[in-house]
Image (cartoon, rainbow, N blue to C red; front, side, top):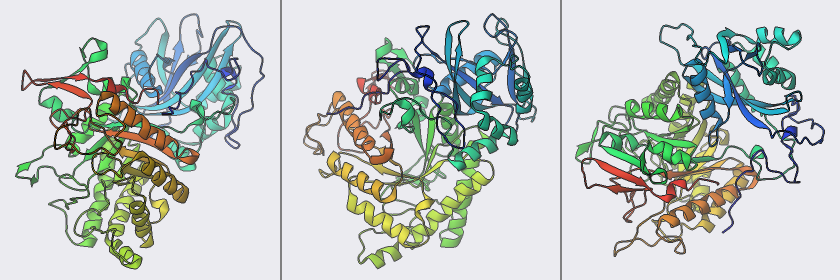
Length: 593
C-alpha cells in the first residue's frame, strides 16, 4: 500500500541544503507571493521555532499584551507572550501553554495569523516565529483581565497596548521592539495596516476568513508533501460518549507510557488527533426506547467541547436536530418543537443561531458544523422526510422541497450567529454511504434542483464509510464517488464516520467490504490509513479529513455493528463499576498521515 510520507521537518531539504531561512520572506497581502531571499548558506545554528501570541483583552477589543523583556536576549525590548515550540505541540497548544506560564492568563479563540523569519547575525541565532491571535478569558465584570508577571527573571511587566503604539516604536529606530516583532512590522506591513484599521480581533478574524486571505505562502521548492503547501487536514475522533464513560467510572491508561492514567484525548492526541467531533441533541430527556437519555444536550456537549477546545483541538459540531439519535432510519422532530412547516423552520433557525452563540460565548470556536446527521432520508420527520429513490427526477425534486426549506432555515441560523459576532465555521452536509455514487449524485441534484438550496449554501461534504453493511463499501468505490463529486462541485470532502473491527468472528459476524484487511488492531490502522489515502488522493487538495467514530465507548464496543469490538481500548471490567481501559496500538492510527 502506498503511504504518503509525513511532512518534512523544518530541517529537511530537497537539495541537501537548509532552505528554511528562505521560507518566510516578505509577503504583501496584495500579491500573496514571496520574494525569496538569497540562497546563501549559513553553517551556524539551525533555525528554532518560536510562537508569539497577540492576546487581546476581549473579542471586541483592539488592545493586546506587550511585555518588557529582561535577560541577555532582547533585554529592554517589548515582546508578545510566547516561547519555543516544544516537540509534538501544535501551534495552538504552544500558545495556550506559553501565555499561561508567562502571564497566568487562560486564553481562547486561538488562531494562526502569520509567520516571520529573523536572523541574529551578531549572535548567530535564527528564528522562525509563528504568530497567533487569542482572546483572554476574563471575569464577568467586563474589566480587562489582569496579567501577572509569572517569570520575573524574564519579564519586567505586562501592559495592554495597541498597534498604533507599536507603529510608533517602529517609526523610531525599531530598537524598542523584540526582533521577531519588529520583523513582523517589516515583513508583514500590509497585514499590520489591516490590524491597525480594524478595531477588534473579532472583526479582523472574520474579515480574514471572509476574504479568504492566506497570510502564509511558500518560497520553498514545490513539493506536494511539504506542510506549508497543504491545507489543514482534519484527523479526528468522535468523543461524544467519553464523559458518560468517565462519569460511570472509566479510567483510561496509556499502554505506551507505562500504563499511566491519562485523559483519553491526550492519548489520542499523541497519536495524531487534531480534531474532536461531538454530537448535539435538542432535549435528550425525552423518553425513547423505554428509557431516558440525559446526555448529548447543550449542557453536556458545550462543556465537553470547551475541554477539548482549550487543549488546542478543533471542534466539529454534529447537529442531530432531534432529542435522540438521528440517522437514516430515524429523524424524529424534537418533542417540544412545532410540527407544521413554517413555525418548525423558524424554531430550527433560532435554535442553530442561539446554540452557536452559546458555544462562542463560552470561548469555543466551532471549526465545522454539520446541519443534520446522515440525512440521506431527510431530517425533522415528517416535514423534512425524503426518498432519494423516487422516479422520475421531477418527482424526486418535488419530494425534496420540505427538506430544502428546513435546510435553508438551519443555514440562515448559521448566518444569523455569524452576524452577531460568532466566528464562521465551515458548514457541512452529511450523508451516509459515501461509496455509493448514484445515491450521492441523485441526492445532491435533487436538493439543489428545488431552487431553494444553492451549491454555495454548504461549504464541505461529509460522508460515512462503514465496512460492515455491505460488500459494495469498497475503497475503490469510495474513491470513484469522492473523485466524481469533487470534480462536479469543487468542494472539500471529509469522511466523517468510519471504523474497523479489532475483533469480528463467530456465526453472526458480517462480511467485511475489504476482506484482505484483517479484523485486528493492525487491521484498524491499515483501514484508516487506506481511507486517508483515498481522501488525500482527491484532486486539487479537496480531501480534507477523516474521523473515526467513538473509539472510547467501552460499553458499546461493536459500535452499532455485528462485530464484537471496533474501539481502540481494551477494557477490564473485573472491578466493576470501575472499568480500566488500556490503549491499543491503533490509538496511533493518525500518526504520520
